[in-house]
Length: 260
Length: 177
Image: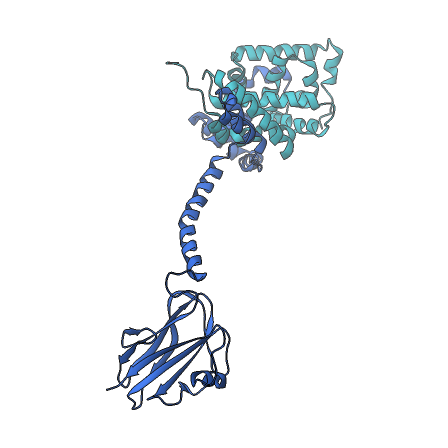
């Protein structure tokens, strides 16, 4: 086909390829029904065009165009007459962040607002600045649903289960001993070397140890020695029997269990 | 301002047409970096021209025309330096003429048209030959009737065929197999 033929028959030529503009309009969803039909017809007829169109749809800018984003808000503010004000100058100098950045920042600020107070309270608790108890560990015992603070006593019976709860900013080792009717302190399980590791807990936490109360006695004193390091049973025994002073950082908790 | 066409918000325009403009630029340069640089130029032009947009044509075609002209201008300014763009233009023309088997137009070097035609003719030729627009589409884009577009192309064709000027022979640079 000659050039003049092409030009003169241009509009009626059924083989006229579809323009880039029509394909772009189709991608943007702005093509008319007629244009869509034409595009579909061409795509069905031409595999190469099909491939090209798919590639075209997949072609996107990978960059965020920071220069443009920076320039546009500044230009707008100057146009609005803000360039002469402090806010305008600031906006000109410091690019306005994109909406997505602002949204993320707002979400981050909300999370901080929620998390910070909780973290602050925990830090206060874990740094030993609690209003009660200080930085030393606290230990309670519980029998039959009744909680016993150190120095307190409680009537119990054979078969009751003794459990322990504690809270402490730092981990510590505990040795649980007993003394029946003012007798010599003994380790509960007979494993005098066994120091129990209790990890830090900012709120009251139940220790895994459970002890069933047995035997005939009138008063059973529970002795719990909390120390920052694991201690041999013999050393603990000497401390509990009053032969040695507890090491620095160690605390002794006593509870009295009474049987009728 | 009552009764006036609402000026589109640049941010919205950017969000909606960003890839569209990028693709248009990419077609001409086949280089992501060049295409992005040029696309930014297009949006800066849009920024200054948007307030003047009266809604006489669809926003898409209006933006498309600005983008295409930016590309043509960029080709003109770079034509002596960048060889690969020439090959890319050949591909574009080849694609648009593939269905015609046109041995005459398929040998036209658009890169040379850049140097030897006036702005309006250049734009029309590019939209028709490189972008594959019908005369009606070209008319819509440049604000001319289809008839006027055809006439402009005819005039160009007559000059080319008459071969009255030496430069016209340069438009035919390749042999078609």
